[in-house]
Image (tube, rainbow, N blue to C red; front, side):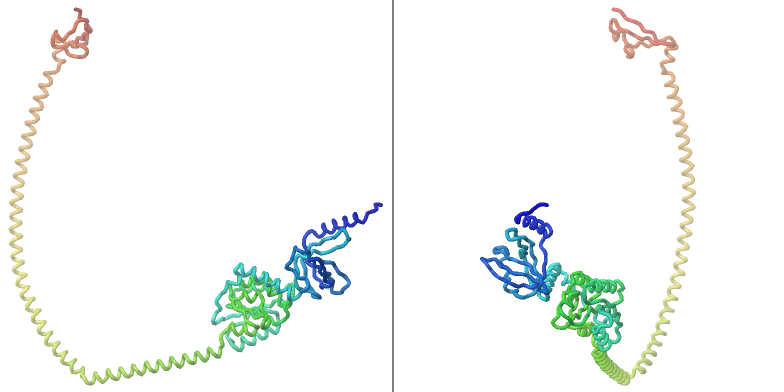
Length: 439
């Protein structure tokens, strides 16, 4: 069996502890036995039973902004790096961060999430609320006082709206998932015009489900406008920031979601009375105008004017008929004379055309005869030329005993054209002979 020295066992213990707690950890406990020495701060954390403690230290120069004295006898939560001081064989925690546990801690965590979501613009996605919602979805705990208060207020203020209840857990670790699931279902069903997310009052821990980051994002992304009524004044959750309208209580949320039916009735009655009054004024105005028109008619006696106009029309009609009849008679005489004149012109034109055809026919025969004479003359001349060409054909001369002498295909017409020592060709009727001329 190996025998360890104190330094060896402390070194082994330190190595094992540092290996087990490689990263910073969070520890909750009650702060006690605080002291300060040479700028370092020492204290102990003990559990709620008081039976267990752990030594803690804030080293000078590492986290000078931490003042442990503010947290004396408080329950705190710390973030620390686990350490083991081999010289004394002492296990301790080197403090990195400290905060009050409970509401203080929760508020700190909520502020961190709030800043993160605000920087991302999650709280800026606001939608307009409908003025006259037909269907209202209520997301809350089943059979809760909040649900009863909301339904009672909606039935009192705006009975025509249909209430759709989507029950959910609103407190505890499972609450955020339950709320998100129902919120998704409301948007998927797409029946409601507005969503009321409500629950009664409680402690900060009771309302923590409505500070869940995933739920807050889901509320912001809802296609249907949302109103929150969570807790009581001055309770404010991150869900309130994400909703399109945040109200102090569930009842206030119900009041804000719908118009007041009594006020609507009063408005309708006011509009009805205004319309009736306006219509009576219009009718009275029209009646006065009609009375005025009747008075004008009586004074002007239009029937008498109509009789005068009718008699004048009859006289004018007779005069007009006579004028038209005279014009028709005049036009008929003119048309008869014009017709006779046109018939005479047509007769003359026919005679001229007949004479023209006679002259044209004689001219055609004369031209045709002259053309035939010219053709015969040209044929005779062509035959004469053919005979002359035939007589001048060189082949006929060769048959008579003549010959053609050529020097390099050039026809020789004189002996002077023949150079000495030249090759000549002599063409006769039945062929060509090559000869050589000497000097």
